[in-house]
Length: 181
Image (tube, rainbow, N blue to C red; front, top):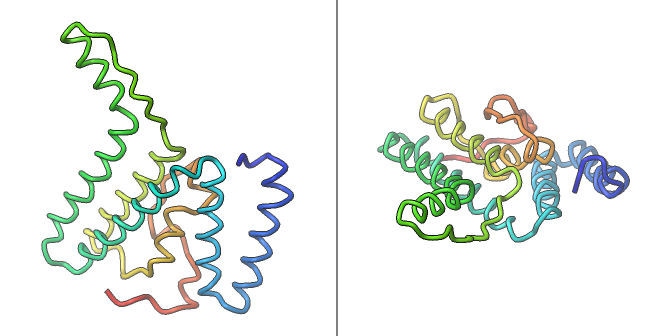
């Protein structure tokens, strides 16, 4: 869904704005979940096949972030998290390049891998790497899963950037208590 499409302007955006304002007034904690779900719907409108990738990436990084915040073996968890994120990005962005280069080196025709680049993968991957680094630096406090999901998937930033740091996005933080680590 493009930001200038009729579906976005006349259907998606009014529903999301109205829902967010109503929920923020009466149930602020629910507004976060609503916006996260709306952001997932926005992403799925492009190609629903990649929604599980986004969801698994969010879940994995959230769990790694919790381990980093717990303080035990934080550097190991940070290294593993960064490596996993870069591997994910590498598979989708560079697997074709490496396969073609390897084939050329041995004199074979380049294979067609048919890997489709998920929309916004660089933005949501580097946003999550920044989160893990900030967590390791002690610049992150415990975060609820719905707040983290919204932080990563917030639809205006998901496909167009810029890469966010967790502190730049206030997700109704005064209206609910953070979850314990």
